[in-house]
Image 1 (cartoon, rainbow, N blue to C red):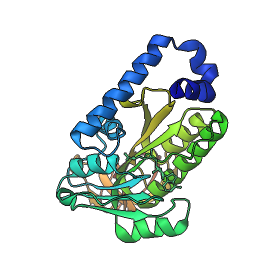
Image 2: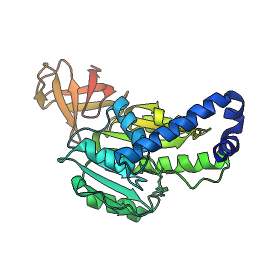
Image 3: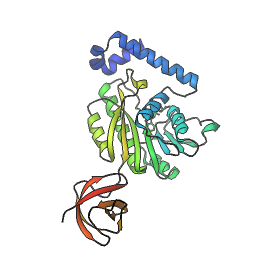
Image 4: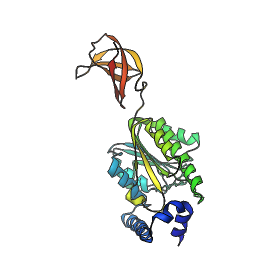
Length: 283
Ligand SMILES: C[S@@+](CC[C@H](N)C(=O)[O-])C[C@H]1O[C@@H](n2cnc3c(N)ncnc32)[C@H](O)[C@@H]1O
């Protein structure tokens, strides 16, 4: 009964007409299935399966990675992330609520209690970890039941998470953030596309209930001092293995075709990747 009311409150116009009673029952049994599995397998929250499924699809977490988990309480994602980074990796969970420490098998995990909208929390994250490989956010606002307001608040939290990711991610780093569907979703996706090589949207099976949540994934953070289409003059200082010249701009590598060491060449930037960019000569 509670579930049915929540569905009509939050998304009656979408789901009330589109979903049959059979779908609702599917959703309920799927929720129960993940809830029961979480109990049996020792996960603190059934949301653990969402991160497992997102990572199985997108491969964002690798062994040895440093991961920052925003909105981490009670710790389901922390458990999954700690497992996937392994003993040589590191996971920092952040939440405004207390997170009980994970058991002794997860010594590579620490927690910070703080509100992510407070700059002091972000400062504590950067003090705790240096370059970060992955930022994941399952943050959710306190639900009011008013669909547009809940959506707007979730986008606000996801943007805060994106800000943290831009601050702390190393080039090539990965980003995952939960957001409720609604009118600002496309705008947020465009904001994710900007500092990453590309973005994708994932709805894991464990999310396919009444919640309308999706996960935006930013792949391979780009932190380059040049942009595609930019014209600039560079000095070629080395040769690459493929025979292209190499120039550096603020430590960022640009490949310059048909050039020798010592050449000063005016180029246009054709493609910007996390670790290097490609150019064409303009003269
Ligand atoms: C869905 S729960 C996260 C579940 C968690 N991923 C897990 O697997 O156990 C959302 C969390 O976001 C946290 N949260 C919401 N707003 C926050 C904020 N401004 N700063 C820090 N945490 C926040 C809430 O306290 C809540 O614990």
